[in-house]
Amino acid sequence: MAEAQRQIILVIDDDEDIVKTIKGNLELDGFEVISAFNGLGGIEKVKQHRPDLIILDLNLPDIDGIKACQFIRREFDFPIIMLTARDGVADTVLGLQCGADDYIVKPFNALELSARIKAVLKRLERSIVKRNYQCAGIAIDFKSRQVKVGDQPVQLTKTEYELLELFISFPNEVLSREFIRQQIWRDSNLYKHSRTVDVHVQRLRKKLERDPNRPRRIVTVAGVGYKFQADACQDA
Image 1 (cartoon, one colour):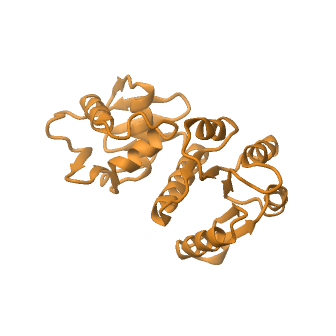
Image 2 (cartoon, rainbow, N blue to C red; image 1 turned 180 degrees about the vertical axis):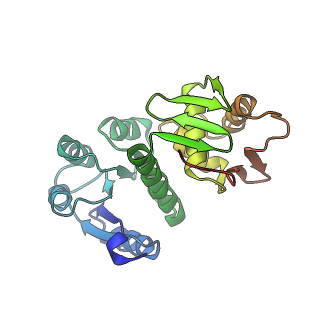
Image 3 (cartoon, rainbow, N blue to C red; image 1 turned 45 degrees about the vertical axis):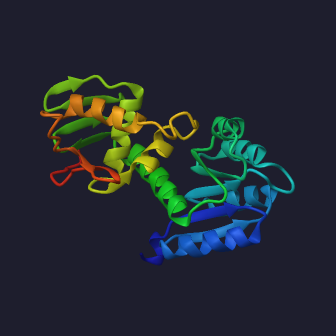
């Protein structure tokens, strides 16, 4: 990736070891990484560098991550992923309510963090650049949230629509059930050990596939999860 094209990620965390680890991994992924070790310093870095994405720790030595998130959201709409050492529902809900786009619980896997970052950035890119999308016979108007298969409108529930958005954000890539669950139901542990992902995929298939028992768009990858087949994909 050319230097001018590198996306900037700001890491705000008072744990220098964690910052060093995140920085090393993300630089391998082609990102430029800057850091701050407290909330107020992080807010200043946001103003100076205008990062493409912010990784923000919930526990900071001066102001907590919730307040820092609120300060940032007053002026900027850069995507924010909240880091938290606490796995309580109340903490994650507070983080999302203050304006965070996603959260991840410490200790976390570097590959998982990278996947979360890419998912958030892809959602942002799609919402900014594209109003309409056509892929594998499916047409989506993101502004009105209308979906058509061929010329026929399809009524999707909120969860089904979010699931379809996730699939088209990763065309021809295998998504694990755990990754799907974390993206769609990221503020709840309710579905952690259930077959909810499979049930919703089956419902979505019934609305998108000509033969849901022999799907051509959303295919099962045995032992892993699902893949959206978009080889004939063309953006509108």
